[in-house]
Length: 164
Image (cartoon, rainbow, N blue to C red):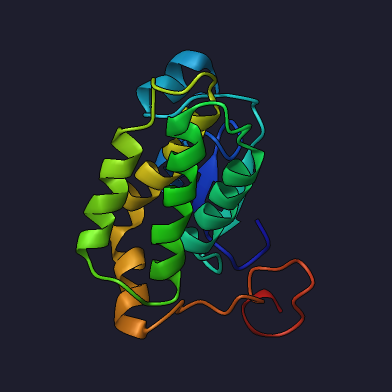
């Protein structure tokens, strides 16, 4: 983290693992510790995000990747990842309603264990966990009429504002 910034959320095993928050900083980075915290080590690729990052935007970008990477052989993944992108994309624009979060969680509940490979399962993990920890941030998009975060503030090249 850069000086003056706070950890907001992190992934212990890459984008396909459930998010953890700064409340989980004392979690041992082993299979048991991370599993007990509700996530997994996956690829063991730690990703750290500070308060300038919109969790909805990050999760949507990962989900777009999973949609693109779906081979299309199984319906839960092919169709599921498509729908997993539609709902957050509307929410990011400030469109939809609070009930869309329940719809999104329902979509996430209907994919794991039903696809041929782990891609479908992995696509749902960051969505479910981000709503669990950051539901109010999702709703802020609706109240604000779009993303309340400056999209440039979380970039490494920012020279003004939050990263200065």
